[in-house]
Each structure stands twice: as C-alpha cells, then as structure tokens.
Image (tube, rainbow, N blue to C red; front, top):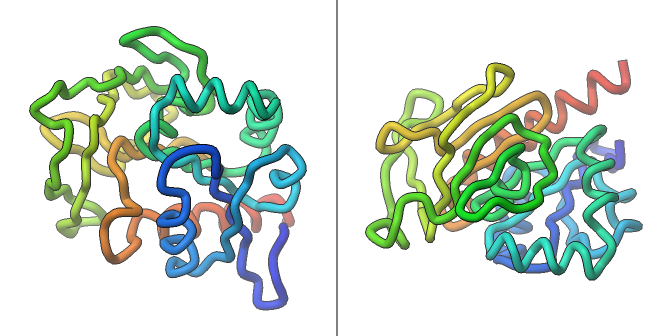
Length: 200
C-alpha cells in the first residue's frame, strides 16, 4: 500500500468532473490521505479511488480523452473504488436510460435519472449502521437490481442507495455534501481491510 509512516492509506479522487475537492476534504477527515487523480500514472500512487458525481456520459468522454478507461478497469480489479451518483453509474454492470459503457465492477443494474424530476434535488434521511443519516440526492440514479454478491448498506423509498461488493462501494447520493463523513469512513475502513488482506 501507498501508506505513510502512520499507516494512513492514500485515496485518489478522480478529478475530471464533479466536486472532487469536497471528496478530498471528506476523505482526509475520515482518516485517509487524499490526492487528485487525472492520469494513469496517478493511479499507481493511490490505494483506492473515489469517482465523484457529475454527468456520466460526459465523464466517459473525458475518460476516453485522457485514455483512462482501461487503466481504471485494471485498477478496479486490484484496488477499491467508491463511486457516487455518476460514479455509481460507471461502476455498474448494466446501465439503462440509455444503455452506456461502464466499468462493470459492481453487479448492479442502474437507471440514470431514475427518480424523475421530483427528486432532482432533495435532502433525505436514510438509516446507516442503525442510525439516521443525511443523504443528498441530485438528479439521482436508481439501482433497479442488486446481484447476489452485492450487499445493500442503505435504502431510500424502498430502493438501494448505498451498496458494497467485495472491495467496492457505490452510492446514488452525494455523501461529500453531508457532515460527519460516515460513508467515506466506511470506504476508508474497507480500503484498509483490502490492504491488510493483500499484505497477509
């Protein structure tokens, strides 16, 4: 792992689109070192990666322009990735409305803008680890199907909104916009566990 002397993992934030600075701050408050990732070389310097929200088709074009799509696929085979909103869309195995390319790292079927205009922007309460937590939805996708190897960590209106599978996580909301960094802390802990299993 790219840990410092105190055993703190380094987490990259894909800095092509979205509020990557808010994710950087949340990760550091959650106990990780964070850095922006813009190139394949940057991926080699981090133990895990956050793919922020934004617009997934635009993000795919940017990944293609920067020749980052294939390096991201390879990175995800070995190291944890956490996708939020558009990032969650990119992690799914199947994307609808419309169908589009994805990394296929989480066994999910996800629909872009699935809630419709009434939830273009909403702050809601979800249950996370047995406690109430804030979730900020902005033109949120909907997870329609979760594969047998994935685990639902939180739901809203009967739909999964936070899912994990192996080393990876996906949220259809924006945890970087809420105080407390509880979701980022979950990812950092998952990253540490992945690092420990790789080193044992």
